[in-house]
Image 1 (cartoon, rainbow, N blue to C red):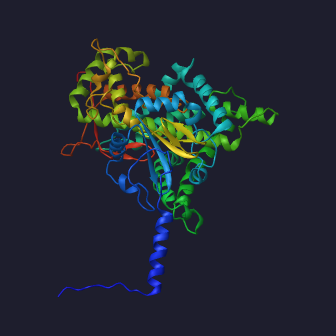
Image 2: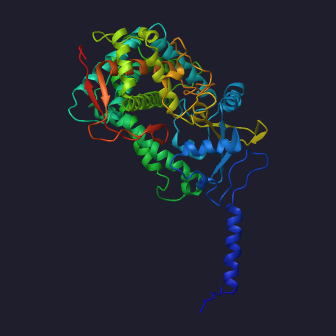
Image 3: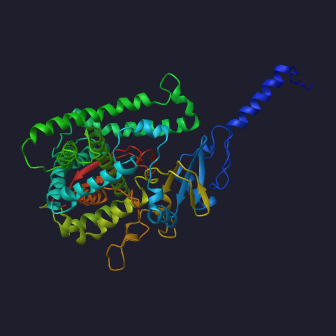
Length: 501
């Protein structure tokens, strides 16, 4: 016998149904007229179900193919606009950079990045600190002291390579790689190198990855349930983020104290010294946005951003070299011919090692470290390519869509360094190659990163052959998307090379 269920018909049930319908109506996100198209919206969640994928970058690419260069995604009730393809990104960041060079200033970003620096600052404070940082890097990094910086990088590589040679077992290179790159940045910022066993230094550098994981999770939660910020408890993980932020604060305070004592009465030879001069100008009555708070924020940003990104890129390149042993042998033969085994690689060798340069460029392309760049925003209603982008909307520029565009880079998922070499073997770089983004907010440390990439990759290949541990599967080329796009953890073996190979 079939069972027939009859819903109650009392007045309370009707009231509950009506209230539920009203609640769904209120919470159901709607696209404002004129905003970019996108997938179907779900109550409360917005477009989150459409993004539920093991490979979010593929999801964003699929949406690009379906909705065009500009589309809109709702995370909960908040609209995020994605700009895809070289032409659209160039239009936004270069041609209309005055509009699209802002950073989000919503509640979550204001709470999480409350100390002003460069990355998430806007207006005069960003402009002054950008100008200062560029001038300081030019003076102590890329300008007349470039030779000194090259020596600094090579000196750090000496410690890095010797540490690798001391390992008797397969190892994960990611932690050591990040500390080594961070030491180069620390030398430019503070004139100080830290030991790999320095607990404050290690905690500071590794806190970047910890905070990134929590930030990604918490920002989504707050977009869907913004009221969580007002209730007791730490549902958004802001307390955990604040505890993690204490680690770099403690390290920086230690370094600042050391710097004050060590550099007393000496000529300024680092960026921290220059910054303190700017603070002194403000104390003497000159208009300035430089103070102890902004100093800590800026130094922390330059240290963490410059370490995590460059180190991750080198790790990706190592991974692809392990997967391509024949290519690794070709590179080593080139290095043996140009550099030999008896001296350090030099930046002057770059022009004679185009294949090494091509491998680095392909590593930056196939696995861009910041595939969605750092979030941009518009602070006023903007009409862009026929769409309305409302004020205070977060804008993500999909660099991945450019670097994986088959029209520019055929077979984009294949690791093929030769795509950056012409018929005569010289390096060619198309205008669409923008792994460091473009426009006013492009990566400040691109030149330094390129120097480190060349010297580190060349030095590793000169001294070691890199392989997977015997009997272990090869490393995965799948990445993990957070604040940066990182490879999954893998172990490697570095076999020392000898003069007679």
